[in-house]
Length: 417
Image (tube, rainbow, N blue to C red; front, side, top):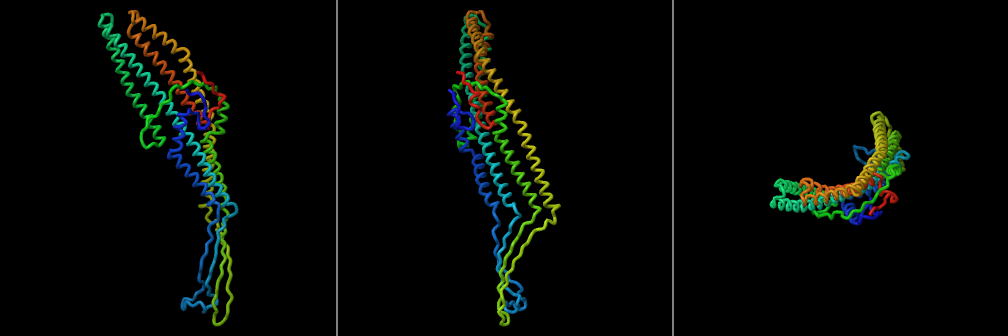
């Protein structure tokens, strides 16, 4: 019996479904890849915000080429130097922030993918429940039609029935057998999809949900819309992307300012013609000049500005669409609940009365075979339809919880036994 909410999962789940979802989140290759990407970006952030390694070198200066002697010319020297490049103020911090925001975006993608996979597993799991129940109805209908066929044959042999009743019953059985093949194939495909998400090495049958209870959801759409705008995982991805590009825009603006390259050198000189010459110390600073700013810095800034504008528009467009998605799914759930209650409260009872009356009338010759047969089929099909509505509610609930970023408010659920 499904009768409680489990907060340990990303979305509402029974213990059986929770186990499948956890297996999927643990073994899914895409999730594993995203986790590795997040860890990589976090490590990269420290590297992006650090100075380049200093450069150490040796050099020979003013060595005469006619003798290659170090003690012949007073300007000849053997030099040892160290150099360090220092970016313009704030560049390293911005580079580090940009990588951290890339990591934050990737973490948001990871959360979104986890929720998406949980929703995919849940919707397929409930679809499997729908197909399983349809298989049960199909089996009952085949048994029923075989019983009806036996009655028709008995009535025909006694001269109280028509041969066409036998033919009609056989046609219905053939149609049901064809439906059975279709349902078996559909179930296999759903189970294969779930096995694929779980990354299982071989096909394993999935136990379908049974004994599903109806839990009435009292959805307050404005609250759900507000929750979606606050917690929707893909909206968080777009927000992180917007922040990242904004940092890139600041960094592109910094590119107009030069980087510094400092160099300190020590030059050692040999004695020249018996004279003890002092060694040399040197220092220099080099800066890059934005001489080609029209084809470099300006183009870079224009490119990043366009990217930022696109990111902002994408965020706003997605945010504006969320309330409509919440409204559509909530309306669909409420409609499914009304249809389910209509069938369980009224239609199934009415079709059951019709089926019993038709069967009794047919047995005493007061009801036509076709009417009796249709009433029996309608009864089971009505039960199947009600169950389809019930599983449809659970599927749409999973979709809605993905959009709002987690569980529906517990106060919005009331179990009906």
